[in-house]
Length: 297
Image (cartoon, rainbow, N blue to C red; front, side, top):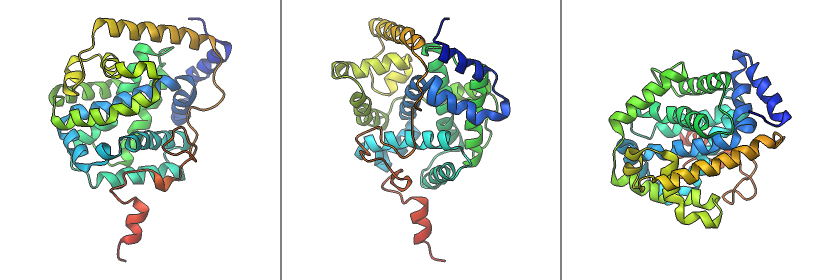
């Protein structure tokens, strides 16, 4: 596969990455080398949670997604990218981990549910990129991604976390086989959130957003659970052809010197002047700093 010299050089460095440099390797993958595909994979991971009734009912009852779908979607992405960019043990990374732990204290769910949500962020983007990325992720990148989410899961006090991508995929598939099914809450959440993706698409593609997502998910059981139309062959062929053209163009372009995400800066009308960390998170649950200040000594 021929590619621009800068892409080839970055790939060479990723291939030579030391295992102990897993944060740097994953950061390079998400912010530069495979940035667009990993971002789309994170979006698809977010939608899958709605196909599990126990998770969907909790999210729907919380009210944050139905009332503020744009904020919840972007804040979720910001939390993930903040931890990737700054590092889990940085001040910003620890703030985001504390936010996740604080919010989850108010969210009912089993340990299997919480582990599944974490694994969607690992398995779904990697599988998407393996199938549709301009190049496939290499072993050092997959191992780095797995280590990142293992470390995050440990900081969130989750149990029985897989230590390899293969083990993560087995757990992920087993959970979905036993838990994915339709629910009113799941379909309502999908309807609320679909506008987020539509807002990112050119106007001409907005009428076909639902069948396009169905084609991206490429799983009849999942699309039925989410209230989406079944992916048809024409849409799947169009998706594959469009991505093939995009990938060919990507290979000819130089590596973007600007990272895909910059902490605190705005990439959306939601935060037109950028954001501060205390703006991120559900509005109907106090942030960890607010909760601490309101507690009696």
